[in-house]
Length: 120
Image 1 (cartoon, rainbow, N blue to C red):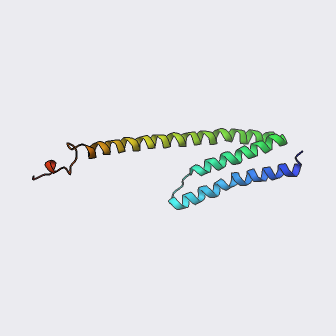
Image 2 (cartoon, rainbow, N blue to C red):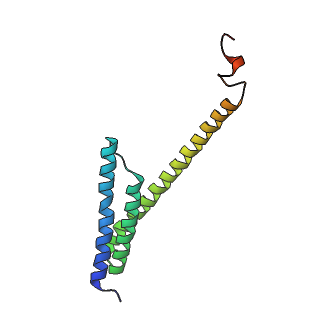
Image 3 (cartoon, one colour):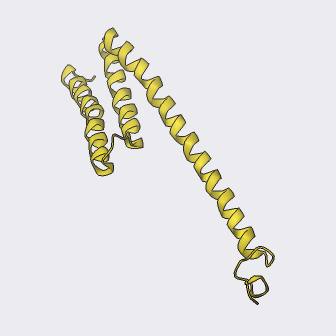
C-alpha cells in the first residue's frame, strides 16, 4: 500500500511540473522579445494537471479536483488548436510548394526560359 508520504511526493512532483511551465513560457518570451506561449507550456500544463488531479482524487481533495479537472479541458483544447493550426500551416506550405513546382517545371511559366527572356 502507498503511504501518505508517497502521495505527497506525487503531489509535489505534479506541482513542480505544473510550475515549470512558467519558466518555459518566460524563457520563450525572452527569446522572442514578446509575450508568447510555446506548445511546451500546454504540454507541461497537461502533465502537471493530470498529476495534480490524480493526487487530488486519491486524497479526496474536492477543491483541487474541480480546479485541476476544469483546467485539463483548457489544456487539451489548446493542444487541439495548436495541432489544427500546424496542419493548416503544413497544408499552406504544400500548396505553395506545389505552385512553385508548377512554375519551375512548366517551360511556359518559367521566367528563366531562353525563349521567354526579354530582348531575345
